[in-house]
Image (tube, rainbow, N blue to C red; front, side):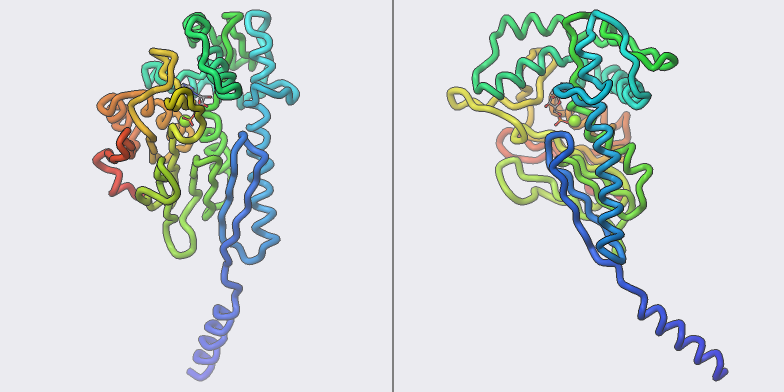
Length: 323
Ligand code: AMP
Ligand code: MG
């Protein structure tokens, strides 16, 4: 009995002595033209830094592959530069991403279309110069957004843009998609956020993470979502925009009109897969509520819409969403 008591006392002592994991956070400004934050619990700062750096380095690979402005070996800029010229052999991850984008395009009825780069580049230029685009140029660019002209060959690992004036822009999907790929390989218990694409790889020591949904009109959260494993992704009109004669022109474009969509201030999607959440947040932003809800039902996702007057509408299961 004495021996057992001594043994138990030793166990209690040892457990008591074990280092308690501490919360650490790392921030990077090098990825996807936005702020990346990684939060986790570790027994030493050095151990956490190593984990965070490894996640950063993996995300950097996707950042470079998806870049359409700068050359990094062969990437999506190479594909765009060779539109109508030749198939380009690319990293298999580009093929996987574009295959998923094709799927999102089909299932959202074209609401999210990464083959719309010719239109999106006109709006990108407009944001840079602060001048509204030429409507004729927009109308002409709208003729070069047919996803059937994106020819993927998974066996040869090539992409060919059959329309010489087509351009790819994966901005609506790439961040969430990359975060998903990296989080699937990461250790549990981390919270990774790339410009508002938030993904949890498991709960923290004391339970779920709490993710705030940003108020489009300022600091602070409209509400919070508990998240242990899965993604919370927001598309909002406040993220990138310019103003002409008192009207804001933001960065999420309705493929039907070629102009910024006007249904919502923001849409946040909660779902298991971060790539799907990213694609859906953009799609729901350009769709009316009923069409968006149909997609949520199909994908098993939930959403919070913020209306023009700052009100909120949530899908039926949002408040019970627990993963
Ligand atoms: P997100 O913040 O995920 O909604 O993505 C917005 C970005 O996706 C924009 O900056 C554009 O590059 C691109 N984009 C905007 N509208 C669309 C759309 N309807 N389909 C595909 N990409 C889009
Ligand atoms: Mg998106």
